[in-house]
Image (cartoon, rainbow, N blue to C red; front, side, top):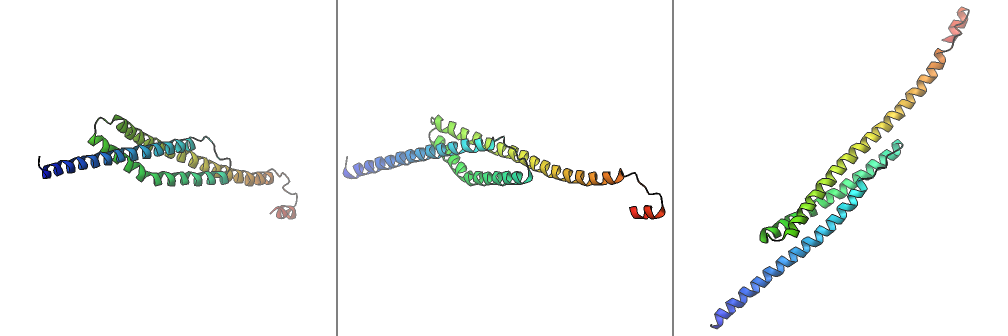
Length: 169
């Protein structure tokens, strides 16, 4: 072979090596991101699975605020989930034998859906508990008012003179 042919072969090998390194870098980046996201998802699911319920309006408000902060965290991770999932799908498209990558992509999708579902269920639970606390407060207020009226209505002395009756008003 001549020198230009050898040079072309060397350039082809370098390009192939560069492509392989790029693919390996993407694979490593995907694995790192997927590991981080799955670990994060596990923590968020533990937080959302809390059975703690508020016992008064103030604690209900605090729990709802904390729950909204969890939503902010979920939203902040959505873009990383989306890009990691897309990277995984690109890797699988280039190498269909990368079943571990497709499994992790599926796991990420499942975890994202589980988190969204858990967040919505916990939001409903906390909102219902908050509404119950509001209802209980209002019921207690109504009970207190009606108790004072009941005591007045139980008063049997209607007065024996016109002046006594006027005094009752």
